[in-house]
Length: 98
Image (cartoon, rainbow, N blue to C red; front, side, top):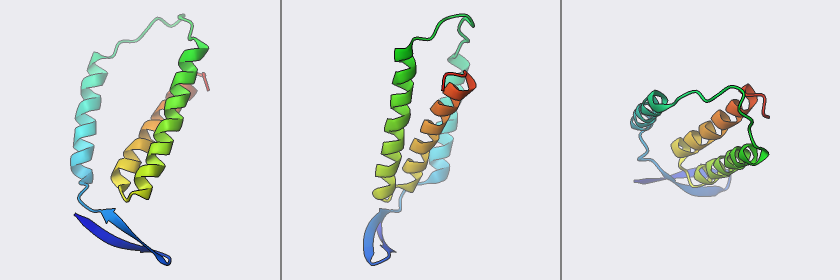
C-alpha cells in the first residue's frame, strides 16, 4: 500500500505497509539465535587491518542503504540499516579498533 507525503513542494509516494512490531520481533529472534551460537575468540589473537577495513566498509554500505531506504519512504527499513551500521561501529569502538 502506498500513500502520498508532501515534503515542501514535492510529493513522495511512501510505503505504509511496514509493520515495525513485526520487524522488531523478527530481528530480536534472529539476534537471540545468533547470540546463542556465538563464541568468544582468543583474547590475544591479532586482528588484521583488512578485517577492520571490511567491517568499516560494511558500516558505510549500511549507512548508504539507510539513506536509500529513507528516500524511498521505507523508514522502518532505513532505521534497521542505520542500527546495523551503528552496531558495527560500536563493536569496533568497544574493541578499540576504531
